[in-house]
Length: 194
Image (cartoon, rainbow, N blue to C red; front, top):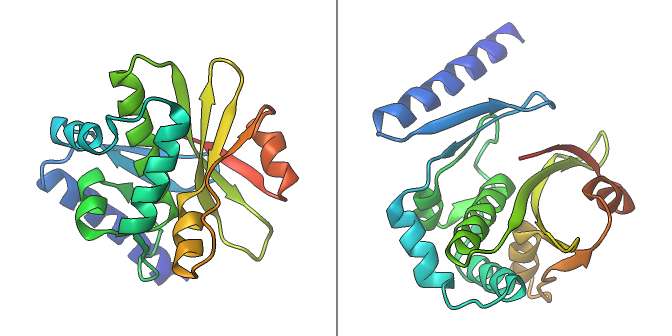
């Protein structure tokens, strides 16, 4: 067990060192559930990519459908990625076209925030990390909250997986309750919001 902890510590350190050596600006956080994550700063190139792909969207509903459609058509779940240290790099996901739920949720958050900034729209976008029960793994999805009280739930990981099974893509869901109450309806416990 001590060897496993040592290897985990070394792998996290190597990931941070590699990120800094490649010129990324990383912010590392320890969340209240004990997990670690980092986001690479968004570049002007990434902002331009978002505007090129989603700049024509004229509403948050349109944006969420377009983001989901892009994810379904272009991304695949990477079953080989071990999420010991969650690190999101925008262009790494775009280039590799593979990720895990945290990557997809961080990508959606980035796209929504850049779109809102360009369109002068006030909204909050959360990466919601939940667990279902003791035997199931943790999961990340998004909630977009508008100033009028509407909240939009979108889970691009679920959409990607359903599309690969040739099932209908679920889209987004609108709700007006707290994120904790919404998650509880589905047997989820919110671990933290980012």
